[in-house]
Image 1 (cartoon, rainbow, N blue to C red):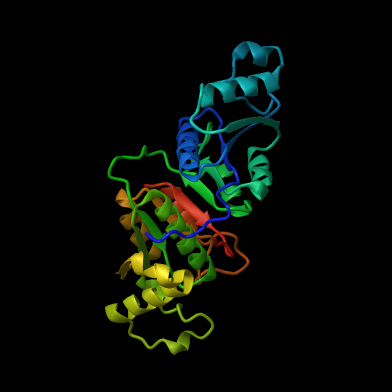
Image 2 (cartoon, rainbow, N blue to C red):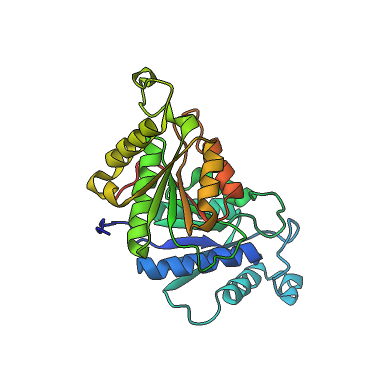
Length: 292
């Protein structure tokens, strides 16, 4: 693939851990990604007053002694383990995990969180939800499914919006680092909005040829000549269903924070949120503007 320079690669990757199995998957994903990006990792664990609740993984003797910061640091040391392959900085912080991660996102290239952490049973945990909404950089929400050898390519949703264009640029840059293909997916229910401010420019009914043309137009607007290396798929289905199906064997699913169909006041659209909750692969949410 043709390389796209990426000015963000020297910024650290920030990852939140809480002692949960999903948090460990997020940590491992962040460490692996940092090797590709040749950057450092900041591992964040935010601790609370014991009256609010403490992870079961804290050393009980430190909790009994009220040494909460030492307990949090012990959890960090155990989660990261000895001699990681990249530069790692550990941060035990008092307060809200979501706030800590959002604040750290200001100087980060990427924030990584587990889909749900210790004590949460909903599809999308409170921390992941808040970070995905408010982080200043792209956010990766790692599912609880361990990656497999067949998880290779990157799937990106395209609908003609500025956020989807940013997602396409991020997906292409990441695929270039990994040496894997990108599959761009456009779902027909969103197609009639691809003309932007004047949807009447597009004549209906919308057929497969028109859908491919719309997808090609959106990709070329986002990637220029780099669009030639991107695989394309148009699907007459709900966008969430189409992307989830395409992501079954994908290493990553990449979406814009919101698309053309959402209210502009929303920080995350319904498709993005649904994929954060249910996509089989780690899901990346990218905001516009983003670009190398």
